[in-house]
Image (cartoon, rainbow, N blue to C red; front, side, top):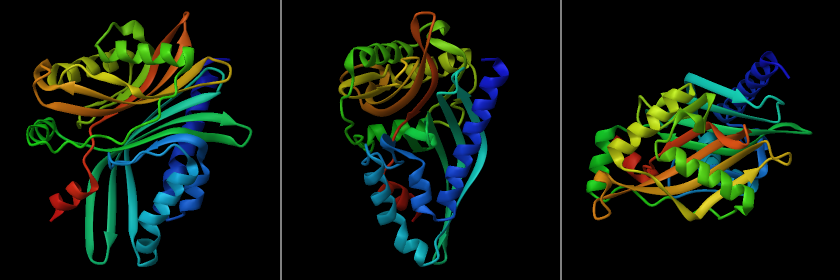
Length: 293
């Protein structure tokens, strides 16, 4: 496989994700859900929710949107930036999207800075989403204020699915969150964090972003009981979804900041290298509604 092949796989994955988002914009929930893997991990923007099956995620989406769509709800996803990558053999790909989510319903209209990441696997039916992670963009000040007032909700639990190889991937992610050396990432790694500037496109910048988040909000420690890892059948790529916690100022008695983390890994040089990462801090749907009032 050549670099040109890898770039083509990434471009194909980008087209797939944009089509996936278009189905959502047009209210075609079943078409949107058909892009999801049957047993993937799906993390909505509301931290109180997490789903581990296409069926459960589709049911939630129908419950959230069907009535409003019938009443004339119009949603939009204005993509402002999209970064992609893929394995050299085209078996897996990943995509980070920085966007503006807009909605208009019954005379009420609003917009929210919004981020989406997808980890994709190539199947007999084409690309499918194995992990999907939605999040709202928040400022550093908002994180501090919400942590101080106890308004950072605990994220919904994820199932613990590891195995021996999964433990290796989990350990690699924990090292990366500690601000380790650039060798922990691929050259073309992409990353997103919770704040507006946290959107980067190479390994050096990903390491810098992770170190900056650690300096501001404390080191993130993954929860062992809430880490879900899926390894590709050939063992050359893997993806992970996990919850974790940091302490402001690095002190255990200080305010806790709960995190949701998803990532894609590839095996290079005998070890696992970070290819994509998305870290978010949840703001509940009720909090967003209150902020608009």
